[in-house]
Length: 406
Image (tube, rainbow, N blue to C red; front, side):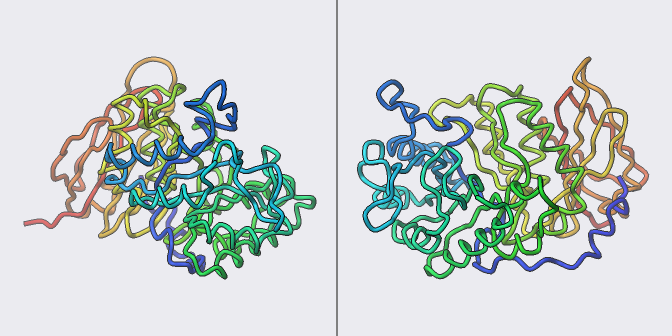
């Protein structure tokens, strides 16, 4: 567990981030895509189709069920919200049947709840679902979103005629958003679409965006969560140094509360998204979410790790006998440590941590287990060994804080 494994990270100069004063900690909220996708059949499935009532209901619940109090503040619309044609002035317009009040009225409703509204557009000629894209309309669309009162833009990367124009398109939309004078969090998918051609320029990406997707869409499957974690760990030397206040790597949505993950696997996703300093954007149905999933998503101690003001992304430091160990430096010399049991057969297994390798424990430290259950493990010293029990596909999450000796 020695921090020296990645000590080079401390020597890398910080990358200049987008200076719009936003996303100083990772963005938290709700996003419709993974759970509701492009369901536009409101006649057959009115409760689950993409229409204004769905977002109003989620906003109501985010206040009533204490999601807002836990830090979740954005209600985000993804693809399939717009009409298939722009209006006579060349502006995007909401589908008149599914959003009869218009986006401005929806934004006003969201704001009346003390929440913020996110919306979706695309850098290319069309969105991924075939709705109008923003290519050739960046300034018009940015101005439209600002006039509507939008607080976050998720900007996808489908249907760009030439991939070499991706960087220019994302930068131009960043400039257009800033020129509106409205504070709008800018969520880019720039590196996701560039990786298949070349290693993205993360200095430029962080200079334009508040967070950015690097890897493919998450699915409601454990194999999907694993693939994201593996890809992130395999590229952490590139990703970790660029993350920090104002700009974050986005491993995609939290699928906790849906159908595909066991509770241990849900705990693993929550713990590792906190370690990775990831945006916490849930995609689930808040009208019908299991109690244990709600409790996990609202766990203030995990959220505190995610929102730690030091703004340092965590990383994988070891792979040992079917376990992975990840750590994240925290404020005031603290450390968050996640131990994942990757084995998918058998029962719980023990893992031993030598505190002599943990700089936060020199000479003594205070250890708290956050997951799978909350336990105070007390004061430990450098001669201690901590033995934990981890379920298959589950995670034990710890915080380790320096303590003064008497």
